[in-house]
Image 1 (cartoon, helix red, strand yellow):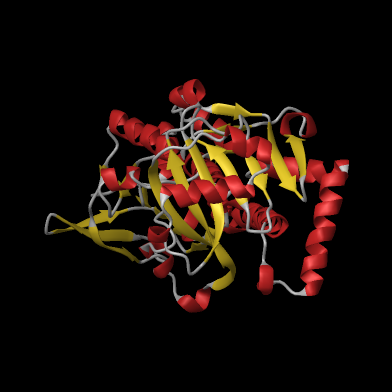
Image 2 (cartoon, rainbow, N blue to C red):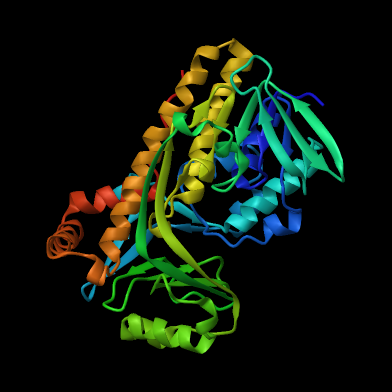
Length: 395
């Protein structure tokens, strides 16, 4: 089999890149090691930056998002007993975010891929990347007990942190940057109306709280918990009691509880690898970077990578601009590091670090809280990062 771009991974970044390239007349093949139901079973966040929303509209998969997604013009921060609403729309000149679950984004993209008939292969094994620095890269894999090969011009590694793409790059080529946090998020998904029509980020002495949502009838809540906690030790009743205790009384009183659809604990970490390309291989999304979810940047940074790689490849095939290929990592990383900074900032601003924080760091945290919530410039900084920084021009 031969194609122009081989895409490893059928998560939202791989599917979005594939659909954009297909729409531009560039042939792609997508390989995914999991079955479709497994891909759709991943529970992820769903706050979409304006740039991500516009990409989904550009590729023609926004009909359901625009009908069912919730446009949010603000978010609330609860710090030190104060409730501060950050008016995203007013502070950014009209920009907003869209609440629409990542699972639904993936579903829409999977349906678009199936409808256009472009090749996608699920449940493949032993994916290997070859000749990445040569003139003729190719991918081998196994499906139904048979060895297969795809010859291509370029390879996009959209297969996540544990995927084969980054592991195919010699380790002495890469530089890893990482920070692990001494806590995780215990998340609960329930078919209950949200406690607020906007997202609430709340600081409490017992730990951080996020009140989020997927729709007007489905809520997602998170509690900061120590890393050693086990999800099995958290009954629904215990979760709801702890959530009510950490919220102000007026919110706790109107909180609607119900049986959980899903509960899980996710550790928080920041991770970036440089460079994000090696020869004809380009890393996209979680294959190259991880952010703590506090800034709602994970999916959005993956979409940012897709934006840059897509724009570059279109210019390569239409204008012969192969000189732009070497700029992918530079362009992508500039926005990645800004997203990492904001996620790190929000994590430090809102969480209780307890014994893991020395006296100096605690004072700096207090100073940040005092400044950013009492300064118009500080609120603008949070708002413009939350809705998403602009993309740079390519070429």
